[in-house]
Length: 140
Image (tube, rainbow, N blue to C red; front, side, top):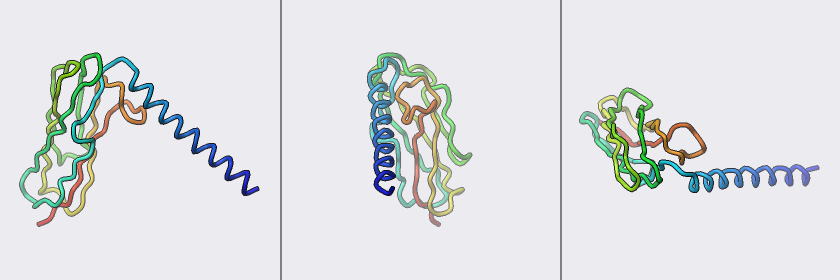
């Protein structure tokens, strides 16, 4: 019985991994706008002094074949101000999403998400929005 369960579990893992790989391959070959973040989708501020606003820009390139339109960018908390391109980013062009983290509102280790609503077709995990992350450790 244990062998059967192990075989079924192994098959389920294989199907899940295949589905994820197939979804990524389809997104790569699908026409449309696509994000490619220059330094990845997570920024680690490291240790910050509480008080000043910590700035960071997620720089990206539209690697797709259609204009990239960002409709909205929403941080997971009110402690982060955001600014983004309000005009379409044409294929091959670069853009940036600027963040201003209010460190005075942070206490110790933090992990925040920033949700990007756009027409990009390569959102991870097939979600309707793209998510980037910031983290760090705010200290007095």
